[in-house]
Figure (tube, rainbow, N blue to C red):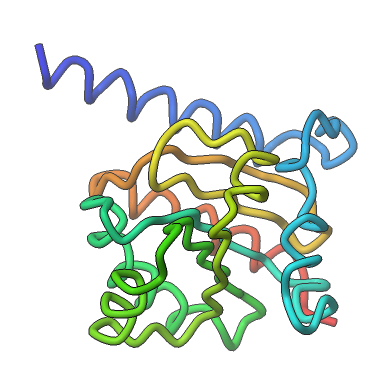
Length: 171
C-alpha cells in the first residue's frame, strides 16, 4: 500500500511538472504570493540579484528532518547550476535562530539563507508542510511547488531546473 501511495505521488509530480513545462508562460496566472518571486526579493539585501535567474526557494526549519536531508542535495544543485544562472534562497522559519545557526554552521551552505522568525513570509506563501519549495523561471513566475523532500523526486526537480536554465541566458 505504501508503494502504491508513493507511485501515485510521483506520478502526480511528473504530470504537473510536464504540464507546467509545456504550457506557455502566459497561461500561469497569479493566484497568491507564491506565484511571483517578488515576495522573496523584498527580503534580500540586493533585490535585483534574482532578476533573470532560475530560483529555488526553500522554506525549512532546523527541527524538520526532511529539511536537514535536503540541504546537501541543494548544495550539490547550487554547485552544479550556479554558473548557469541558478540561485537558491533558503528561508528558515525557526523562531529561535540558535538551532538553525548550529545546523548551518555544520552544513556551510554556499547559497543565500534568510530568516523569517515572525512567520510572516511563510504565512503569505500559505505553507502546509516542511520543507516546501518553489521553483521560479527566469521571468520570475512560479513554475512548480513541491511539498516535502523525497530523494526519489530529487532527480525530477534537478531535470526541471536544468530545462529552465536551458530556456534562456542570464542577463
